[in-house]
Every structure is written in structure tokens, then in C-alpha cells.
Amino acid sequence: MLELFCGIGGLRSGLAAALGGSAGFTVVKAIDLSPDAARTYTANYGDRVDQVNIATIGAQAFDSYEASLWLMSPPCQPYTVQGPQRDAADPRADALRHLTEVLGQMKRPPKMIFLENVAAFEQSESLKALLAALVSAGYAVEQFILSPIQFDIPNSRLRYYLLATLDSGGSGSVAATARLLPDRCKPLADSSTSRTCASRTIAEFLDPDLVTADWLLPEKVVGKHSAVLDVITAQFQRSCCFTAGYSKRYKGAGSVLRTVAVTEAEEPAVASAIKAGVSAQYTESHANMQLRWLSPREVLNLHCFGPEFKFPANLSRKQQYKLIGNSINVRCVERLLCRLLEQQEDGTEADQPQRKRARTEQNAQPSNDTAEE
Image (cartoon, rainbow, N blue to C red; front, side, top):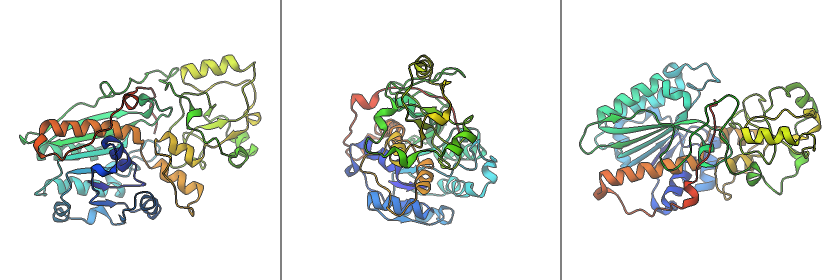
């Protein structure tokens, strides 16, 4: 397996979950330019990350890796709706453009490719070029736009996913983008007043040992930004997408948790909000709610990283939030990689190594959500 734009290793964790453990694959190389991401990756997985510009690696070098599977999560900044959306003109899209060109030059291209990015990537010029290159090279491509909440994780993180399998017959194809993974998730509610919700609550993902006082928002901040804060309680079955700007930005960067118990007078409004999956209109002011940030550990939990995952001790909270915000949801990746691996086995079963597959009924549970970022 070759892991490009590896970040903190979410794609690798998803592959390990799909195969029932890391013994089912070998990482030939992991590549990322971020020193913080590289240190975190190595601290958790042991493998060294090559901090090189992918745009400088030629087709011959990629051939030499002999990787049957490429996992990649290219920079989302050229495409996210929260940025200028310069698309392929953004220098941060150069590495993906280079990979697009390299695929047509390789003698031994990968049998499978998995890519993740923000939902807006679906309409990008970068994707158009990549799809054209994949079809020309003989790949069968599937596309999905999905959110963790569809897999029963109470967090909204709508993302684009591409699954490409090299067709032994040599005829490439591209399927229309799907918003449902058959038999593995539930659809999203399409309404401004009602959102899909998970059956699981935020409480299941909170740190029971966390000291609340260490994570409270200052009263001045709450007063200034109360109109844009997405306030949830432990009983909520959804939360907003956590971005790299969490704890620095207050609008659209992630939810904050109310720690003061809901009053009897508020209960009807809160119960209604939980059912609809929208923010509640509380009778008390935000200043009385003791709002706190979710800790990096709690956000990792919502991204489905295992309890063993740790950050190096010298990374600040803001650095940790940034790394998580730029990462992926492990559960989504796991379910999609299961599909990709099954398709490859169906198409060229004789070429595939023996795989242990951990696919329990609980992993196939569904859930809900709406768009962001």
C-alpha cells in the first residue's frame, strides 16, 4: 500500500479496520509534507513518513514502489467552500495534477486507488482531469458523497470519495456519484429544518476523565459569538463538522458542548431539537450554559480513531485540532475500502493476496447528516 498525503494516518487506520488488522497489508511508503503530521504518524504506526513534494516523484519511482493500492487525501484548500476555491489554479493542487499525469506514464499502475476530499471536489476541474486519466488507463470508477452520521456516528462530515479498480479488460468507466452505500448506511435527510441523526449520542464519545474547567469558552467569547455557536448537549445525536480551525474560529468550525444541565422549562425545546437534529433555542442565555470545547481526544473519537491513538506530547491543542480537522473519518473509509477490496477480489481474484476480513454486523449499522464545508 502507498499512502499519499498521509496526514496522521486515518486512511491507514481505515484499511486496518477493513482487513481486521495491520498484518493484512504492508506500507511501502507514506508521504506528507507536514512535519507535525509526520511525527504523529510515526509515533502511532512506527513507519517513517517521507516529507517530500509528491510533484517531484516520477513515474519510474512510482513503478518501483510496486504498490497495488494507493490511498490518498489531497489538500482540500483548493476546493473547500470556506476558501477562495481556486481549484486547479491553486498551487496546492499541483501534486494531484502530477499524479494524474503520472498514471498515464506508469508501466505498473496500482490495481486500486482510493481518494477522499471535501464534497465540493466533485465539481472541480482537478477531478475532471483525474477521471479522464483513470478512464484512459482502464479503471472502473465509483464515486460517493457520504457523511459519518450515515454510519451511526453523531458527526456531520460530508465528503467525496473515489474508488477506482483497474479493469483487466482495459475498458475504463465512471459511475455517477452516489449518496448511499448499499446495505451499509442510511440516506441523509434533505431539509433545512430536519437533519439525519445517529442513534448513538455524543455522550458515548466524551472523555469521562476530562476536567471541564480546562476546556470552557471564556464568557467574553461566548457573549461575542453566541449567535454563531453550534451548541449541543451530551444527549445530542449529531454535531457539526470539526475543521482545522476549531477553537480558533467560532462559526462553522465545530460544535461546542453545554455542560450545565437542561432545565425543566427547556426540556421540550431541547427534546425537539435532538429529534430534528438541529440547534435548540434555549430559554437561558449561552453565558449560563458553561460551554466548552470538545477535547482533541473527543474529536478523535468522533472521527473513529482508536483509543490507542496519541499525539506527541509537544503538540499544542491548536496543532492537534488542525491535524484532526485535516484528517478523515476512519469508519467511512473502512466501509468504503471493504467495498473496493471486494470489487477487486471479484474482478481479479487470482491476483489478490489472502485477506482476513473483519466485518461485523455492528460495523454495518446505518445513520444520518447534512452538508458542510
